Length: 275
Image (cartoon, helix red, strand yellow):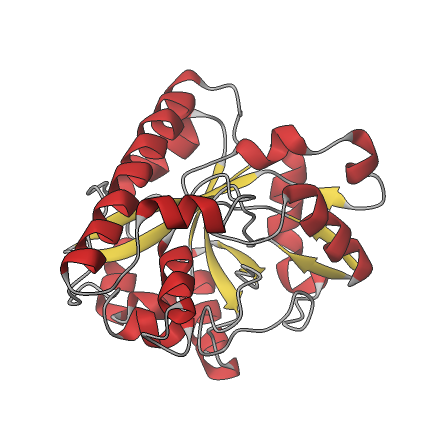
C-alpha cells in the first residue's frame, strides 16, 4: 500500500488544484495521503465527498519556522481545522506571504530583472497564493535563468539579491500550536536542516515524529534518521514533498515515483487514525 504524507497544491506553492492532486494520487495508486501546504489549510475546503472516496485523506500543514537563523519546517497533522489560534495563524501568514512575495518581485526589478507583481498575477491565474517557485518561473520565461533550481541557487536563496526572509517563528511555537489544536507534530525532512547537531537539538523539543522518508533523503539518510527517531521513541513518517513543479528540487520526481510503503510508517498511520 503506497502512502504519501507531504505534498503541496496551488493553495501554497504547488501547481495542482487540490482535487486534481487527489485525483493524481489515486491514479498513482496512493491509498493514503496528506496535503501539507505551507502555512495554509485552504485545500481541504475545496475537496468534495467524491474527491475523498477511494483514498484516505488526513489533513496537514507545513509550518515555516527558524532555528538559529536556519529555516526548519514543522509538519502538523490531524489538528482541528476550526481551532481559533490556528485560524489566526493562517490569516496572519497569508498576509505575510503576500507581502513577502511582493517585496521579492520588487527586489528582482531593482536588480535589473524585468518582472512585476502584475505579471505574476496575470501569468499564474490559477494560483491561490504565490511562492518563490512562481518568481523562478517568471525569471525562466524572461531568459534570466534556465531552471527553477538555478533561480533558487542564485538570486532567490537567502544570500541572493532578490531574497526576503520569512517572519521568524520558532519551532516550539509551531509545535505548541499543533498540539493545542489536537494534532501531531513532525520534524520535516531533517536532511534539509543541513546540520545534524541542530537536528539532535530540535528533537529535544516535544516533537511526536520525524519525516524519515523524503525525496531528498538517500537510503543512508533515511536509515540514519530512522535511528534518530527510534532512539527517542518517535513516530516515523514519510512524504515526497511533491509540488508539481519541474526542477523544484534537484531530485524532483513525479507523484508516486518516490514510493513509501504503509508498513514503513504503520505507527504514524495508527496515530493519525486515533486523533
